[in-house]
Amino acid sequence: MTNEYRHIPVLLHECLENLALKRGGIYVDATLGGAGHSYEIAKRIGVDGLLIGIDQDDVALCAARQKLGTIPADSCPELALLKGNFSQLDDLLVSQAISGIDGILFDLGVSSVQIDTPDRGFSFKEDCPLDMRMNPRDTPMSAHDVVMTYSQRDLARIISEYSDEKWASRIAQFIVREREQHDIATSGQLVDIIKAAIPASARRVGGHPAKRTFQALRIEVNDELGVLKQGLTSALRWLNPGARLCVISYHSLEDKLVKHLFYEWSHRCTCPVELGICTCGKKPLVDILTKKAYVAQTQEVRINARSRSAKLRVCKRCADSCA
Image (cartoon, rainbow, N blue to C red; front, side):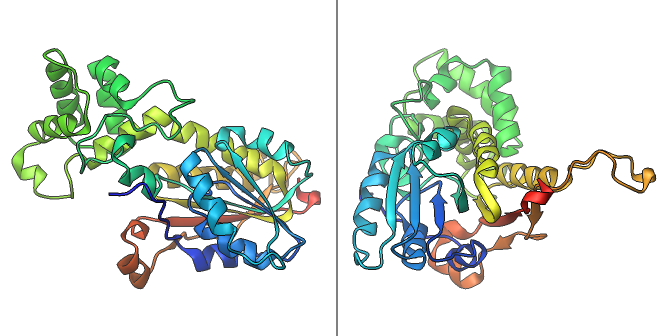
């Protein structure tokens, strides 16, 4: 385990191609991480370009700054590395005094450093404090708070809705029963409870038995779906005509949300189909460029196991006449 930031960019070639990078353009990496994607973007947009990187993790920002600092000065664009998350996207871009952007990338999910640093509490493979906050300073509720205070019904609901866990009700029941006896303060304690709740036959298939419950708690603690919807909606407003929005998701809830928003933005007409013509005047905001999401190929999965579940969807802002 290490606190050193490591980041292998997922679907890198596909992202670079679909962002349609141009020299002198303004691009945003909304999930900067270790700057794996940003490093390659920066090299392609040149000294006249602007790269805005956003992350809510201080460790990520420090690592990204070091990595991007290795690009020769005569080929490095202007860099603006900002602390924040999707929900603050409007304010962050306003602070840069720009009128629009030529492309933006969202690489969702938990970064390697968050998973691999024990005291962050994301890993079900390590016995560590039950936290899971991506931004501890600004997120008052931890996974420990959820486990110890949510009703059995609410625990079952979030575990089921956010992870499709078959044994959600039983896991919630076991958590409530256990917390009546003592504090559930570490990930190791929670893993033991989950294992006890899931029958032995079911634990032998489908990977680690705690994986789905930990995912659900992480989504709840960080309001990941609400923040994502807000961030994507903000990003749409900033896209110049022809600009690209690229989103890499890692689980079905994220992908479903992205797919739904893209569809909604590209099908705004509310006129009855039988009318045959559009009279509402609500034109599409985007063209969807990925009818089927990009997925990692075998070679990439072999090198980077975390790319296995990745899906990339891309849309392009329509010209002003479509707005």
